[in-house]
Every structure is written in C-alpha cells, then in structure tokens.
Amino acid sequence: MVQSLSHKAASSAPDLAISTTSLTKVYRGRGGEKRALDGVSLSIPRGSFFALLGPNGAGKSTFINILAGLVLKTDGQVKVWDRDIDRDARGVKAAIGVVPQELNLDPFFTPLELLDVQAGMYGVPRSERRAMEILEALGLADKANAYARTLSGGMRRRLLVAKAMVHSPPVLVLDEPTAGVDIELRQQLWAYVRELNERGTTIVLTTHYLEEAEQLCDRIAIINRGSLVACDTTRNLLAGIDSKALVVTIDRDLSDIPAVLAPFSPEIKPERKVVVRYKPSVTPAGRILDAFAAAGLGILDITTEEADLEDIFLQLTSTRPKD
Ligand code: ADP
Ligand code: MG
Image (cartoon, rainbow, N blue to C red; front, top):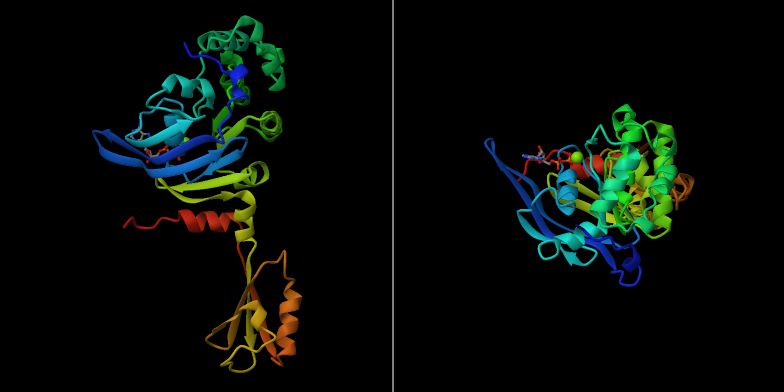
C-alpha cells in the first residue's frame, strides 16, 4: 500500500517538485538497443505549470513513465518531492499522480468504483475520500455509475485524471492529456488542472500543441532524441522568439555602419543588403527605417523574416545527424 500524503504535503514542501540528474534509459530488445533518454538533467520547481515538449519518439513518455515507476531507468538520479526513486519508491509514488498516454481502463468498473479502488490502494481513509467531488470537477458526475466501456474517449481521459488525483498528490503529471479530446472538453480539463495549480499542485504535462503550452505553462523544456535542448520560463523562451529580421536593400555600398544605425546592430551583407534583427514588441520597424533615412541611405527594397515558437521548436528539434 502507498500512503497518501495530502495532510503532510504543505508542512515539508521542497523547493523542487521533481529533479533528475543525468537520467538515461536504454531499451534493450531483440531489435538491439534504443537510447530513449541520454543524460537528462531537469529541475521542476514546486508550484510550476511545466510543459515537456518534443516530437514523437523524443523520450517524453519514457521520462514520465520512469517517474511513475512504470519504466526502470538505466542510469542517473530521480527525485520526486525530495524522495530518491532508488531509496524510496513508495514515497515517490505517494507524491505523484500520473495520467498515462494510453487510455487503459478496466471496462467493468464504474468511475465511482474505480476511484474507490484506487483510493483504497493508496490508503486514503474513507473520511478523506472525495470521489464525487473529483468526478464533478471533471464533468463526470452524471457518469459516476456508468460502465467505463460506455464512456467516450474524452471522458476516459478525464477519468484517468480523476484516478491520478484520488490520493491528492502534490505533483500531477499528464502525458499528452488532450490528444483526441475535443476543444470544449479540453477547456474543461484545463480549467480543472489550472485550478489545481492555483491551489498549489505542481503540474507537468507533455503535449505537442505548442499553443497550449504557451498559454498554460510557466516553464517549458524541449526534448529531442533523448536530450534536453531547451529549458526556460515560457516568458524567456517567447522573448527569444520575439524576434524579426528586416532585410533592407540600399542604394549604395556601405563600408562602415552610420552612427544613427549603430544602436540597431545591423549586419552588412553582400549585394547592398543590410540585416537588422529586432524585437517587434520593443522596436517598431518604422524607427529602424527612419534611421536609414537619417543616415542618408536610399531604400530600394525591404523584406522581413519572422520567427515563432514553431520555428524555434523546429530549429531545436530538426533532425540532425547525431555526432
Ligand atoms: P515520446 O513519448 O516522446 O513520443 P517515447 O518515450 O515513447 O517518446 O519513446 C522514445 C523512444 O524510445 C522511441 O524511439 C521509442 O520507439 C522507444 N521506445 C519506447 N518504449 C520502448 C520500449 N518499450 N521498447 C523499446 N523501445 C521503446
Ligand atoms: Mg509519448
């Protein structure tokens, strides 16, 4: 049995909800070896709403399944809520609720029964069980006594969220929770998860909907081919993306950068082109063009190049030959 720690959680809350050091997973099978995680060191602060992004096969589910105790790591360290998974696997289980990517549910249990069995497994005292409250929050109250096999995909997904929450874990991890869930239910799911986060639950999710990550999450890590390629606050990542390039073709050759243009750090390119990278949120393009005029340069042509989260994501995860 795994103990619920709802009543203890607040008093001894660590700064980091999850931390991994050089986490490595090599799957070994008849087809040979697959290095699914290659030395991932990641810290997830308590209270964050954290997104783990990456293309298919990047290693996201492997990472999450190791935390969940479903996959054994090959090497490295894992701590959840300050408990080392090698020394205190039960402590880790008590601290985390995991919503798996696959929709596997026993078809002969009703949602209410399922939550009751789960609560029993986690040793939640009867007086502290709140199955109906959880079902209500997830819009499943009217299905409390229906067989799981009669539930739609979206309802099953939400039931898995409910199941992960019965022991009130301080950390909730969701693996592709909105895959195959329609927009309305997706919003209902996020409203619930957001409220949990506001009340202190640390949320970690994987998704390949970049917009979703951008809107919901305060921190984003990007993983590709088993390695971490970016990890920052959403604000910093987006600030990095808040960048455009203005490519200006001028009417003469430039050898030096005129003083009025210098603050924009332009690059002189062949064919009388000058490239200025700028943040549209800070610098209006007109101010840059005014500087060209003030320098006495005639403008023959202008093009702009734009970057967004999608670009950055593709740039960081594009298939490069490994070594
Ligand atoms: P993601 O969730 O980011 O799509 P996964 O963690 O599911 O990625 O998979 C990472 C890599 O490990 C993939 O190449 C996948 O084929 C491989 N993989 C996942 N599970 C197994 C397994 N049980 N046995 C062998 N290889 C696996
Ligand atoms: Mg996956």
